[in-house]
Image (cartoon, rainbow, N blue to C red; front, side):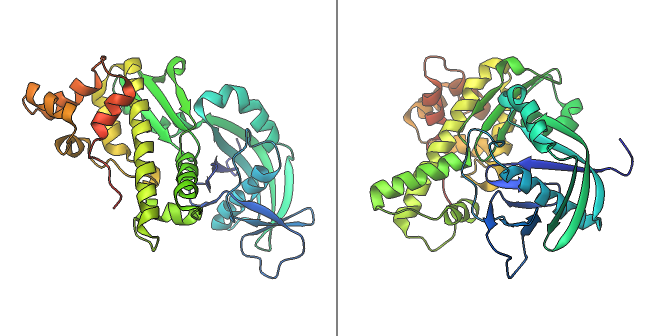
Length: 331
């Protein structure tokens, strides 16, 4: 690769587009006439597009239309603008969900490589880029690739995204793809369920932005009955993710690292209720089953955690319910 080539890493999320320095909503819509204002406006082939507006609807694939290609150009422009470049050779490094990587990799490369040279404008600044190379990486693996050399023998990596949750065991510093899991239980799923319950119970929806603000900051002007629904549904999502982790435990048989993941995980960028500290969660647990375990294990926190997680007499979802009892709150 030429030393003058600009490497631009792009995460094509269903909620947000992310580069090293920029994050913006994965939204784009065509403007039928020349806009009066050009902030966040992409111009290509005589057409104008507003970037970062309402999030795109989730589809089976991101290559079904030109939306994510155009968003890639916008992301590239934002990074090049930071470098003061208008003409550049570009290396795109992008990602796909872990278990869909093999199936979708070639199609995604072909999609992004549809034009080797591209001229376009972003916020009235003209860019000319030459795509030198495109590489696709498994999202979950890419997040930790630079740290793998420091990992112990068995680590479970958990990647909670907008649409999917990836679980990837790394055994002896190498991903074990035979037991990797991808579930459609990310942030968007939770938001959809919140609005489904709001319609059912209160006969109205809540704007997605407002839901995210509650998840991020906890404070807003929504009535308490809406917050109650958000609290209930985000806790249910936390339970699902705890269940996933418990179900994955048998694949790696290393609860020390799973405990670390739970302790540090919370949810990506705070967009769910956070499990700030597993030890505190267990100490404050009021579940009847937990209290019984507490007596039998002489109040040793680590033993209590293992006792419940490893109890094969209970389903994973039931063990998750025990571990989550009294532990989740919306601040």
